[in-house]
View 1 (cartoon, one colour):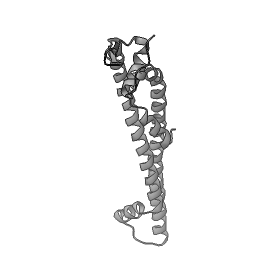
View 2: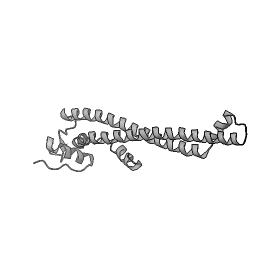
View 3: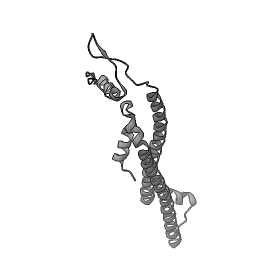
View 4: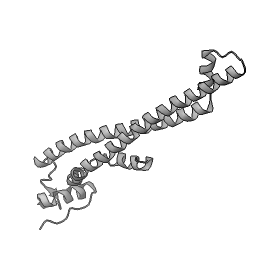
Length: 170
């Protein structure tokens, strides 16, 4: 399962750099698989933690009933429930369940975001094929313009974004 730092890294990688569509497309399936796999594991752990919570509550209730029977004390269901819910065992099991459930939810949200990213990549590749991102002319000087080709378009866009002069076309 992914730790918090790894999850944060995958969250940071959601943004698509339109100047690196080839990299984004190449890594999309692998990242989606890793996130989906981590979500599956986290979901299983959350279910196990819920079962652990139920077992802890049941064990505490049994112990309280046995104590009440041994001491001939009257124990109502309301009082029993109150003691179970305020026990340390319940608090620990509940905290574990909530933590596991929160991680599973975060990974599910990330998995869904990567599904959306895949759709966005498809659209952006279609736009790229249609030359939507191509820089038709970049002003090198006041008197001259250079047309960017498909090979230098990516570098030209990156340079234009960084406010640097584009590489010279050969």
